[in-house]
Image (tube, rainbow, N blue to C red; front, top):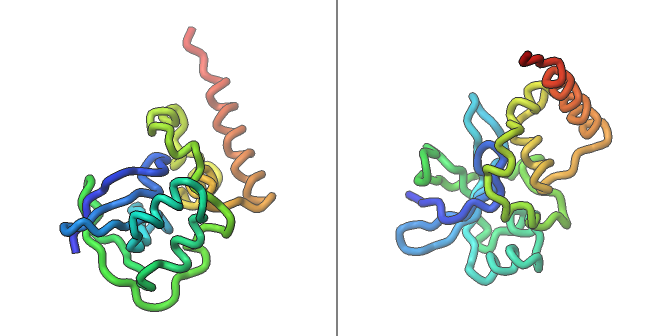
Amino acid sequence: MNLKVQEILIWHDTPQLFTAKDKIGGLYVCLAVDDKDGQSQFLAVAISTNRLQELNTGKIDLYTVFASPELGTWFLVNDFENDTFTIEPFSGEIPESWLPIPDEYLPQAALLSPETFAVVKVGSVAKEAGMNPTLLRQYLSGAKRPSREQALRVQNALHRVARRLLDIRLV
């Protein structure tokens, strides 16, 4: 089934959470869940306009949308290219690590444009921290919360990057 991106809700270097439509107007919400061979993997669920409105207004959390899809079916995004892609049904259990943490809502920061974060590349900071870029993007978007250890790991990576920037001399 072919889908077309409608709205990007969270962006960190690449789309992390977005809505899409199929050819007959069915809505889907897609969440970056992992990186495989340098490509983001996305989990998708069909969503009604009412439930999407509840998500956008903070009446339901991200976990509920993905842990309990309205149709009881999950999909994996394939061939993500520009703003069109295909999906296929996912069989089996969804790994818990793919789900947002409970009681995390769509952040208001998601309304900011990608250009707001252009000065800091999340993928570069993740590489410096030795962690999965998708996981760091989920921390930044509020979809997941880092442990104290993970937060310190990211903080130390940012400090190393900042020290390298401070060492630059242009004169």
